[in-house]
Image (cartoon, rainbow, N blue to C red; front, side, top):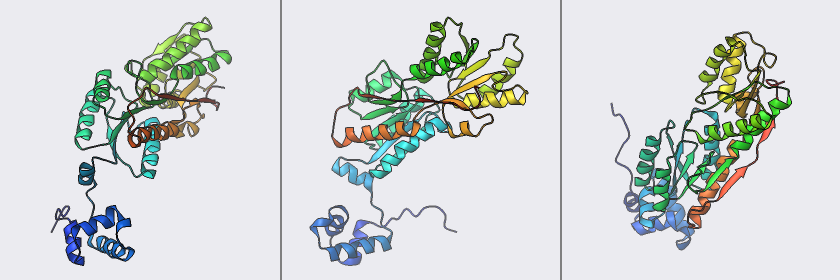
Length: 336
């Protein structure tokens, strides 16, 4: 039994021989149809469809020194925050006839560097980094070599680079200020990984709000994963001076915390109020529903891809342009 893909592909010459025309005529019909008659073009397109001919866009791109392939590196595709940004990138790319090559980096700098090199070796036109821990040395190398790239979903302070994100310091401050306004004084911040700029900025906002109101900070280290929040619930149950509220650096941890607290029969928000950040779809489904800061994830993706297309099609040099999108507090049931 024959298995696998048939590597003997139909070529442009096969199509030309079938119709009794030159290879250049077939090429013009596919790439520059205005220079041949409508009848000839229709005959060629019909033959192309019947023969199963597939254009080699990589080879064509090399010849024309153009490419419509974009490399997108996502720090954790299983996280709805990043996957929604990626969806926005993809939708704009598709509308402009660009193709996305997606790489999941698992938040590892070495993966970002290896994937970047591999993608560039395969003639991608540009790169989009969705989240991640992009090393400044790596980004500087891309910039110095005139590689077009855009950062989506996080800010990098050590290097000026095209960026679409939100002001995460303001996000952290807003969430904490809301809990303080409800009368909470013992407010815990459940952080993401220490190497995450997003988590660091949200923590900075939390600390600023606590300090401004003369309150002592309580910080628990996390990793953006649901299991972290679930585990924290068991720890909180055993504490004599339990926090009355928890602000989690993302919804995944907040949802895990709600599940853990509910499993231990603690009332939310009666015993512990919970606020998350991002407004992923599950925030509206968990019971009680999650109060959270709504981050425009999809728009971050669409704006980032549009920015990259502008760089590519206008042949602009990399700029330090940063677009910061607005966020809003979405009040539901988990905080009172």
